Image 1 (cartoon, rainbow over the protein chains, first blue to last red):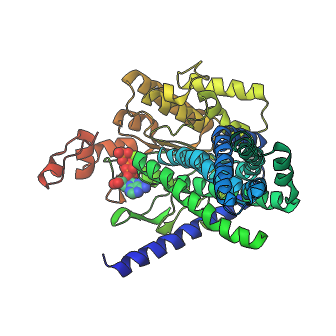
Image 2: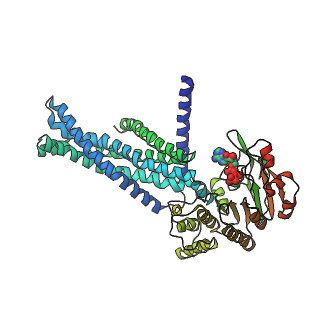
Image 3: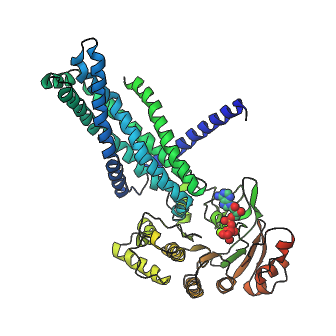
Length: 255
Length: 252
Ligand SMILES: Nc1ncnc2c1ncn2[C@@H]1O[C@H](COP(=O)(O)OP(=O)(O)OP(=O)(O)O)[C@@H](O)[C@H]1O
Ligand SMILES: [Mg+2]
């Protein structure tokens, strides 16, 4: 295969993927506004995404905050700006690291699980069975999962913010001997509510993207058990990419 | 359905197939493994879209109708799948209750009673609490059968309901089907490899071959037909296939 052909194929695949996501999104929105609204399924998904994500997200946040404090301390010390470590940790966590890392972790944990679950439903004809029972599979499967993603991600990010800042605090105060009062003061001095909000909006968007992609990859699975494996991997790769790419544009828009 | 064609890649499975089934009629579709019986059945309920041709239900084009209209039509159908296709996130009882909860106003008590009734019809009473993964293939298929009939649909599609069952359970299921046919008079389309079941259940027997309905006759005439395809099928004779160099597939 020539280079041109490969590039062309990739471009076509990308186009097809976007087309599929958009058309499935259309069906999801349609399903959202149609009876029956399955509150129980939504609650189940919220609990599942939340609890599955909680441990990894919290662990990631603590250590990210800690390492961030460590790194900025080393760097800032060179121009005698150690006092601002707290501000840097808090700003980076709230605006950037907490939402992105939480998004990536939940993609690995729940986006993949959704792709695997829906994918195996596809290959064992359970999705056909749903249709035969006059049930719209997109409404039944996508709506609760995507809503759960949009709801849960910001909640996880709030916790990640708190733990990230705590992690930074512990390193700065316990390990590097910063003054606790000054550190806390500096942490919150330059924070505005806008920093928090922009992170939470990002989180909501990431939650939406990773669940949509997880569901789509599962839904479009072909080729038996092997296909389910492929869908699961693709859900993680594409979900992560979507988060990183959209993060740039969101940052630009939200500032 | 008229002029129905379907291909997967280069493989033509249905090739301009015509079939009309009258309301309340029971038809059995026979055919060699891999000829497209399941594909045909899936077209009847709109699980697959035809490449060409139309599927009409009481004169209404399934693919000309809106999505919600299509679901309304499907609500009158019940389909049991070849491998059961049970929802494995639910228990057996929840599987059968699923259409009842979704499409009727039944109280929980009524749902429970109907689930128990359907399960005992297929001789599986008392397994409501089990998970599909704990069941054998034959049991799963029977639960799928129970789920398909739970809503008492007007049109029943059965994809190999008795394959892989012992002769006694096969007979039980055949009786259930005959009983359903006589009591509720549904339109019934059954795919089976079991000729005994076929001739018991059917008012019409059709043979699918190379994407078309080759023969379509009442059971007695089908059995007596002199068509070579039918003869080979009824007698389980694979010699013709073997001679023409194709791998001999078991016909029965
Ligand atoms: N989703 C699909 N993608 C590609 N090919 C398919 C698909 N579904 C069915 N086929 C092909 O269509 C043909 C008919 O399949 P079908 O399942 O209808 O056979 P069948 O008559 O039901 O056989 P059996 O008696 O073994 O169940 C097969 O050759 C199969 O390879
Ligand atoms: Mg089949």
